[in-house]
Length: 246
Ligand SMILES: NC(=O)c1ccc[n+]([C@@H]2O[C@H](COP(=O)([O-])OP(=O)(O)OC[C@H]3O[C@@H](n4cnc5c(N)ncnc54)[C@H](OP(=O)(O)O)[C@@H]3O)[C@@H](O)[C@H]2O)c1
Image 1 (tube, rainbow, N blue to C red):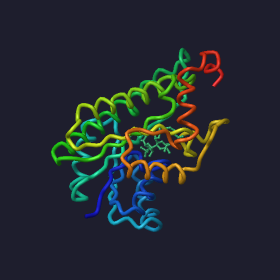
Image 2: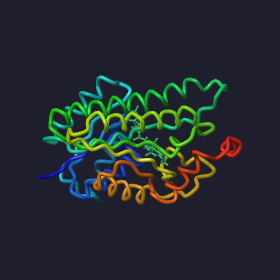
Image 3: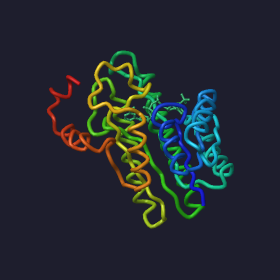
Image 4: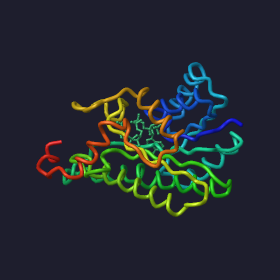
């Protein structure tokens, strides 16, 4: 039977590239994000290049929390069921503390944390009814240590990773797998304005690694695994004076 995956934040970057990878691996796709024009463009490209068994798109703002639940149910119905929900939509707004950026911080928490929790909760509700499934969430290496000029972003990603660990424990023995991904720098519009992106990888390479990790149902992993598994451990112990220069 054809497997299927719902991807949030599928109009761009990691979500769009993972959609193509999963299509090539035989998955039917449900793609959601706010910009329907971009989603339709992604759909046309994926149909042309990646041969999906089925593909549906739908507009969704993950901060319209009630609509998140409707979207999961509607997409499941359109594809005749879902096996994986990839909670991936996110923003990075470069907020600075004490500089009038509270609105950026609030938006970051609303999209990356509350919107992501709403999506994971809607997926859990659906998978509990169905009797099983797989929830995959995009955190970040910025979750390992609060980073300067990304305070709310770091908090949102650490918060979401911790939420997913709790969800995994709460749904233990319910046949629901949970994967937490911690990407380093992957080349997407989210970060292409930054002057310095250490150990940058292409979005195609990142998507291939993510698709492999999803199919292996790992509990958690950095992306790519090396060097970020080592750097992640270092980030936790580096002195504040070093972190302040990042
Ligand atoms: N690229 C990296 O190096 C990196 C590293 C660590 C973590 N991440 C995380 O990876 C995820 C994907 O990021 P990306 O790098 O692929 O960036 P991107 O190219 O900017 O894609 C972000 C996606 O999220 C969607 N989105 C934003 N706000 C949304 C909302 N309110 N409702 C629904 N969808 C929304 C965007 O689509 P619309 O504008 O159409 O809504 C877009 O499809 C994010 O969670 C990001 O934090 C990325």
